Amino acid sequence: MDKKPELMNTAQAAEYLDLSVVYLRRLAKQGKIPAVRLGHTWRYLPERLIAWMDAGCPNMSQQPSLFDKIDAPQEVDAGQ
Image (cartoon, rainbow, N blue to C red; front, side):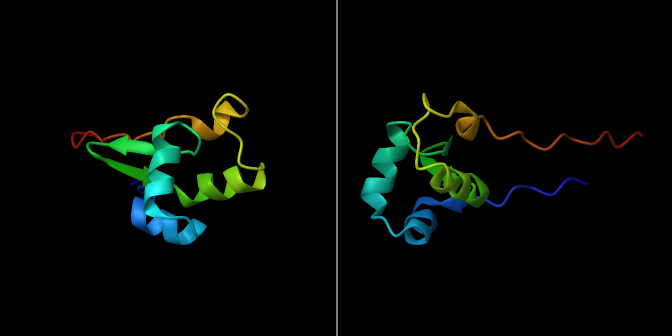
């Protein structure tokens, strides 16, 4: 079975990046930080945040691969 990616919520990611929650949410809305919108909340992959910082904090147009969608785990057919 595939392991689900560990996602951080906005408060966790803000603490991790030493940013305010409001500022981080604004960056996510503007597409300036790798984030995934799930319903009404934003989620962040720690690996993408590290890569984003290592790349000099580019926006989506500068480095689109950091902003690719996260692949959902494939469901396994119980009949196989």
